[in-house]
Amino acid sequence: MDEWQSADERNSREKTSRARQAAEDLFKRAQPKADAEVARPAANGGLPHEEEPRRQPRIFAVPPRLPPRPQVEPPTAVEPVRRKPAAQPATRTVPPSQIGRVRALATYGMTPLQVAELYGVTVAEIDRILKSPVYTGKMR
Figure 1 (tube, rainbow, N blue to C red):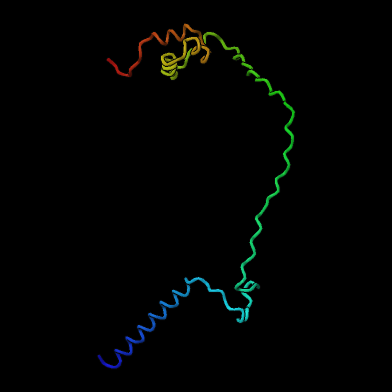
Figure 2 (cartoon, rainbow, N blue to C red; figure 1 turned 90 degrees about the vertical axis):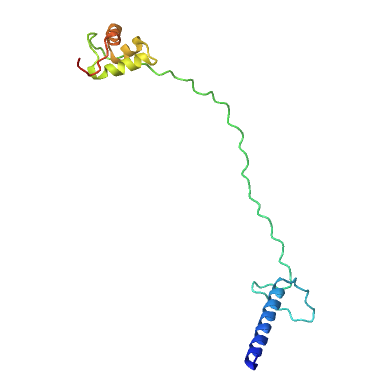
């Protein structure tokens, strides 16, 4: 080893030990300072060794509770007024485009009377649609 290498190693060791000492000083508990030391004001205007005064808790004012309102009867349920269908001739028929829908409605939950009221036709017309053969679209 020559002279330069030993000087670099010595500087490196000194830097490492100084950095270690600085880190230890950061995390060390603060020792109470002697009274003879001059007290310097802290950044916020207080003395650095004085404890900050305990903060007062925030207290929110709650508005007084109002007395409950007098009992009001809930409105009675008003039944919807059923409108009568407009007067239509009883000879009306179901359009051909709606025949599949009529069959589906009658098959899956509605009575023929309900379907007849929906389309404004007689029950006989609905029965005629239900009993007629289904058109498949194929020619024989």
